[in-house]
Image 1 (cartoon, rainbow, N blue to C red):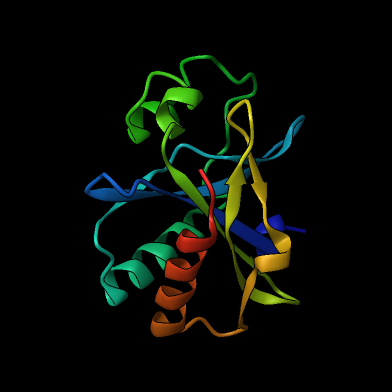
Image 2: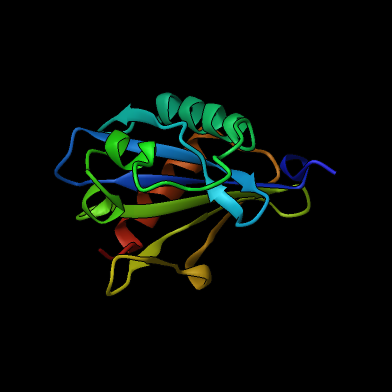
Amino acid sequence: MDSGLLFKHIYLYYDEKGTEAFLVPNGWHEKLGVVLIDIVESIPLPFLKEELFQAVIRTLNNCFAKQPPEFPTKDNAIPSKLGGKNWAAATRGKKLIVMYWSKDEGYIVYPTKREHGGSYQHLTDKGIYLGKELKSEALLNAVQVSIDLSLR
């Protein structure tokens, strides 16, 4: 069964000092499992309700749309699209918001905490459940609350 029919998640990288945020969809890698794929959408800041909603819908539709390379390389295109030479530089100073959809649960928005070493931990206890139908106002509110709750 196609994984995209069961679940999808996208990462939203947000830089308070920047002029745009970046959304990245997930895909499937035969050996690594769920990975981000190099389809990066940017959206201007501050967020406008309808722009954010449309960008999230487009990015969700891009989940599983592209096959990641069989052997991940150091010259991954995602960091350069986020404005850095590597993952550490590309995500430095950025908050991460994870938007998750599953057939059974619907939409959930999670804030994260940046860990020592640069990885992010999902703050699952602070997830904001949006239901099975995504609405632009609820999405904007959940993203803004999650930005406030996320720690760099």
